[in-house]
Amino acid sequence: MRIEADQVYFCGTHIVDLEAPFEAYRKLAMDALDRVQLDLPEKGKILLKPNATVLYDADKRIVTHPGFLGGILDALSERGVTSDRMVVADGQSGERPDQGFTWEGAGYLGTMDSRGVELKCLNGEEKRSVPVPGGVVFDAYPLYKEVTDCGFLFNVPLAKCHNLGCTTLAMKNLMGILGRPERHLCTVQEVDKPFESDLWRLTDSGLSLFEDRFYHKLCDVVHALQSLGIPQLCMVDGLVGRDGTAFNEGENAPLGWTLIGTNEVHVDAVGTYLMGLDPTTTPYLRFATERGLGSSRVGEINVVDLRSGNLMDLKELESKRSKKVLMPISRYEEGYYDRFRADGSVVPWRIDEVNKQRIADGLDPISVR
Image (tube, rainbow, N blue to C red; front, top):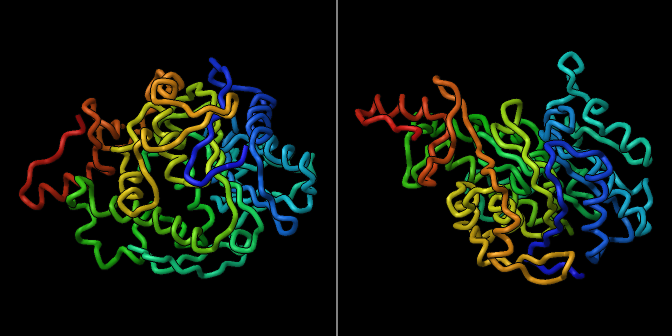
């Protein structure tokens, strides 16, 4: 099946457990890719960019599973791509053997070594300044040359929640292609300093200015990548997902799918929906829709079932949705709070900072419920 722009391709499998073996991840990736036509270049590197920011054990569902990456690599090998043309790379927090965060402990080292594929930490690698057409926060981003010069990019996130992003899928996974210090979008950056006194005031979005700028920064990354014209594909590791903060706090949940597509917003909207959340109220998807990067309404997105070859209607898509809502949570002085209230409205991130500002401005604090 030829991949059409803006469509999303679903490949499902049955799972009930909170963990899955390496081979299950590998098989899901290969099953999906066996059903699509890939227009791969004859020359140039094929770059797989996983979510591998903090190298936890892969079964904890904080990093893209090495078995899923292995399945993509094996599918590429079957199509004649030699191992010297494939590379798995991310800009991450680095190995921390004292805390157990290593490429080996995450299962990456053995997976890549056994296939003769290069595994690269992008930290410190050469960068290239890439203009951001229509940028709202950044006019240009430093992207690693490993990305800008590759022949084909696989954006390979996993399906998990995030305290700031709410869901961290294809769009947020692109943060790892940015060089330091610009990569640290979740912090107050130099570009934010002129607005520092207003960052925790609410805007018309109902969120803080800090959040608004963060979501615009994510959209700016997508615009920068698109400007390069690199052939690319998003492919979500959604066999087992995770709720919580995106890091240590959270629980696994069986999902049983992968999504493939070229439009990050559409992939993320469908993935967010399948995780039990409303993509139309998920902040970064709202901003992406307003920026013209795609639609957050799953009813406006063609979703194709790769096993049947048929378009999935909303009823069928709903049947694949997680029965448990994968809820993003954020820390505050009382512990943790859900980013979405029972009525579906969004609670601002860093609510303590927001309420501190509101009290200083003579306004009532906001409740998390």
